[in-house]
Image (cartoon, rainbow, N blue to C red; front, top):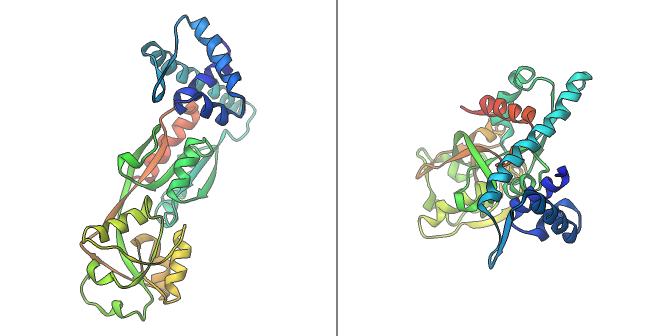
Length: 297
């Protein structure tokens, strides 16, 4: 059996499609089909069966591919071993992070990063939740920190562990009339207020939309920003309000350019560490375990 055949089979299993697997591998569909056929002939049983809904994995194929994932992880670990023996940096761990989360997680991570991820080089990318899902699926990142979404909104093949829960608060320019309130702001009072939103169907935006949906109305959306920094800058201009995680506003509140207010009903979001179900190399698996421990409450 050839290593590439196993890689092709795992790609088909993940995509549930020969066509999508070929696109992901950047080769022709015929090449994928041919190599899978050769692998099945050598194994002595089919790995996949075609159905009206696409591709299913056979019972014996599921067991075979489970072991194949372990073998691939072992092979990838050889690269780590070679790097360690020549004294090089062991690996680059690429993390995608939702907008506004750096103030929450980076102090925790970099407090003892040398001990948490010894020898690793970190690459941290900020992206909307949808992009994090897609980048994980396309294997451009190793893990992602994002808002915990409803299970049906999480793409197949991704799993997550909850890291923390944070309060969502209303932010406004310090001179906005709402800042004079002595009690938490009822969401019903915000219906006519121009509001700046993040993503509408996942992430922060989904949480905010649900607040308005629960009272049978929709927000008066002034603008949609794909990152919290842009959103805060718009609110600082005095042209709108927004609802965001409290920790991501600490600097602006300390500088006096924004003011935060609690909302009622109270609202919070769970932030989670997402990853692919398929295992990485042993070294990266150890990094992910250490990362999860460092970031969780």
